[in-house]
Amino acid sequence: MQSDIVAIIAVFGTISFITWTIFSSVRKLRMARVQADVQTILLSRFDSAQNMSTYIQSDAGKQFLNGIRFEHETPLGPMLACVRWGIVIIFLGAALCILRAMGAVDSDAIVPGVLALALGIAFEVAAFVSWYLYRSLGLTQPDNHA
Image (cartoon, rainbow, N blue to C red; front, side):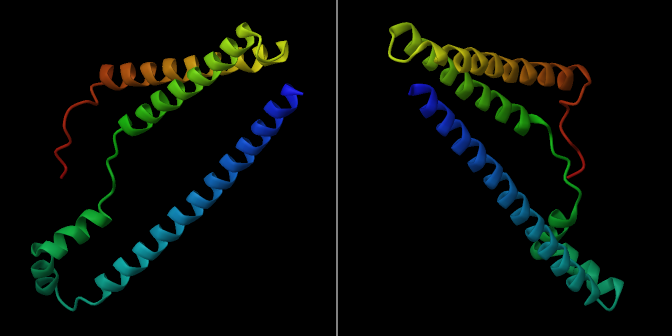
């Protein structure tokens, strides 16, 4: 009975995650296309280099340039996301193992608990290795491109 509940939750969680991933990717793609179209139209409106130079020196022009500049994103965001997900999954696995030890669930709950613990620890190890490589490659210096 309890294994059926775990299976239902796992299926619902998987479908929810896939749906969220698809919709967020589509939304980001549409936003990028709209932004690119607006920037293309704005750039085509300048009739001379002097007008464009004047615009770029204004606050609105600086914001515009920040929008079209290639993003030099550091991998710290994904590393922190990896740490965050690892902690959540470790707690999920620990909770399943503790519930099994207390006898609140049947013996089938130990397998997903141990797998969740292993997956959470793998996330933490991956985040640490990424951080170590990031630092050892000298990528922690401040970016002077701004």
